Length: 400
Image (cartoon, rainbow, N blue to C red; front, side):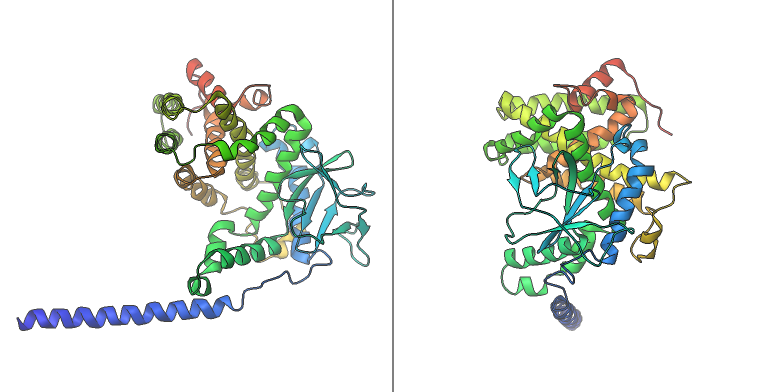
């Protein structure tokens, strides 16, 4: 009996200290959160770090993107980045007023003004005020005049918007102690990942330039999101099975195993659509969203991989001054982290599943049909169609 009391006493003291440490960590997190920014440090011009990201974005277009996707690097795509007050346009000397949302072609904004007393890589650049926080170029692609332009938040503003958005969504007390900075770092990672994200949006511009009709259909069909049975048990279970089979295929070391798991994925996808009563229109929705966003996610992840593998590649000199730019040395680790996100994306409601499962299908096509990029821009041809054809022909690339 005395032994039991001693054990309980020790456990009680241990739990007490665990509780004290936990409360202390929460207080420290809350105090640290008070230091987090709630607005961009500079809004009226590009910061030096943002200029470095943009310089590397342009450098990647010149040196790397053709190695990721033949023809992509031949089209130099200007860029708009924006914060809470201004959008900044780089790459067009005399821009026409405003921008057009694509593919709706809705015109927004007015004249661009040259940023006085500041330059980007010794060149002038332009800005546009954003008086309405709901009217921005968004994170995608637009056109300025006849030029396709990629668009994305500045890195600093993306972080600020992340903090502010989470604070508004979390309940009181929790929103004070939540470790926002840790969570941000897990999601965004280092500067390399931000630059790769800029290339993601540039690839959307390339899709629009290369196959406008297919791009237009793939973006416009997003309107069906509200009709999609995200919460259907049969549909959700099927997506989880498909994610698991794609991951098994990705991790296969033999052609036999690879082809088997791809065949099972295709079979389970057909079964899910039947059991969940997915209409032909919603099947088309799945295929087109995987094509649009899955391919861009693939290009985003391949950017760092290719940059790290090309021994002669040297990043833009200006970005080497940033402490969190790692010259893509962590690209393989980040890729595996993103591969690990596939199951979670398949389990969540919303379109993130199309990004991740589309990306994984593209990764598999690199092994099963190395010439697949010559086909995927054709009308009415999608990732699962090419996987089906590659399994039927048995064409694979040996795993190194």
